[in-house]
Length: 183
Ligand code: 5GP
Image (cartoon, rainbow, N blue to C red; front, side, top):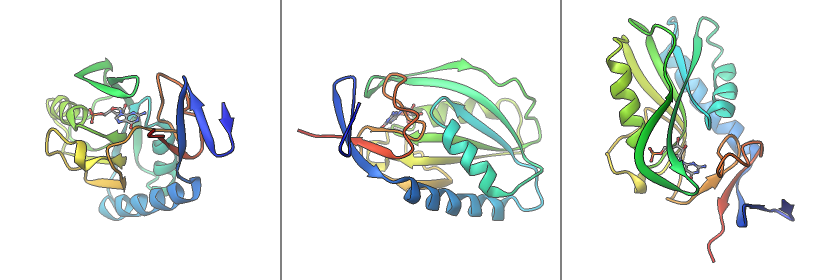
């Protein structure tokens, strides 16, 4: 449900936080950094489902890296509006990434547990390099000290939805990003 500028999902109220224009401009900046770092290379983008599918789709098109590949992987750690503390792999990697320059594309880094687990799993498969691009990064929530290589926005430790990010599967379709309203 959408009333004025607020969005209500499962009884929780969310307020506008980042507009589609602000998102597009930061996605373009990150894509430019990746394009510069991978010029002449064939990066293998790895989109982390489900939340990163919107970001990944915009990001890879902005890079202009026509020789790149993309595949998908799925991890889950959140239920409702908080982390469960345990990270589960739901869909594994089907492509061979041995010797490839892998760029993981994630929607949000919160505790950093998913990022660390993913990088550990991937390194076992012998890539030439692994870097990490995220739309959102909550430095104050980190439990791991993990710092992404590419970040579109650093944000405070608040729950966000929209532009691919969900609340129990809902609200991924919102073109803008919303933050949970504090009472
Ligand atoms: P971490 O393992 O870093 O704690 O969390 C990573 C995952 O938690 C993200 O891929 C995302 O699925 C979920 N997550 C963390 N913070 C948020 C948030 O503010 N909103 C939503 N929708 N998901 C989040």
